Amino acid sequence: MEHPRVSIIILNWNSWRDTIECLESVYRIDYPNYDVIVVDNASRDESIQKIKEYARGNLKVKSKFFDYTTENKPIKIFELSEEEALQGKLNRPLYGKYDPNRRLIIIKNRDNYGYAKGNNIGIKFALSVLYPEYVLILNPDTVVNPHLLETLIQNIDCDTGVAGPTVYFYDFNGKTNIISFAGAFLVPERGRELRLNFKRDSDSLPPNPREVEKIEGSCMLVRKDVFFEVGLFKEEFFCYWEETDLCVRAKKKSFKLLHVPQASIWHKVGALTGGYLSDFYTYHYYRNRLWFLRDNYPQKVLIFHLFYVLLYEIYFKLVQLVFKYKRPKTFIKYALAIADGLFSR
Image (cartoon, rainbow, N blue to C red; front, side, top):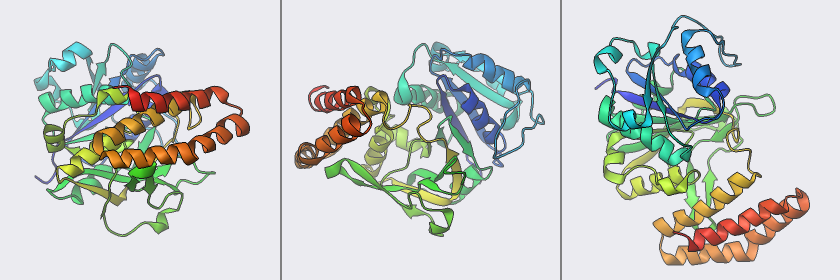
């Protein structure tokens, strides 16, 4: 199949400004066979209303990456509750009458389920109703290159389970060609990843796709077979490490993970969670890191990691959070995360 169907899932929570900029970029994709699904995690702001205004053509999008257009407006909205989505209630004949850039599915979740369960609801709906060959998980705080899907699809083979583009910083000191993510290898003993080409410019990229051990969750193209054979995101993670966990599980099932350098998006790194020093990030990141290690690696790796934490990281965090940034409560969140990561579940 020259242009296999791709269902694009964008998870929104109180971020309609980012989401409509993301949508406007998505609808410029030069790929002919895709769906767009916005899953709203029970936003407390005006997200649903504002996204509908955008779809009607009544809300102009500002972006430094493109000029707004009304050529594809109005966009037909197919609005579903969480229950309707899980039951697969979609008027498929009516939906099929609209071109990909003139239709939008909105799923309204009852609660804020986080990245994992929120995306899972969209994935389940797509797989059971739309029957795509691939699902593209896309953060709302991203802008995509119009050639994103075409470039990804052209560069993967039947053994590729997960593929991802080069992720550039949305704005890095005024530059838009500085790399945030271009694939990574994992160092489980330290609970870290080695990001390739990190903070280097686009000229540093290799000419051809390369196998890696992780694709970032801000934009990951997942073959449907991965979900059927490996499963979905682990919902107890809420957010952070769930995409790494999926990548490791896919690799264990012999699926390739591929970074495609020529495919590209721009990401407002940290926009959705308050940054890397926030209490939210600190707790979920470090708790989930331990859950990830416990689930995927032998006990000796976990023991080595704990030595690393006790002999180095905990002192680094103490100096960083308490003395440098004057955030003692965040350090307490870090300590609580380590305890919960070891003894919960």
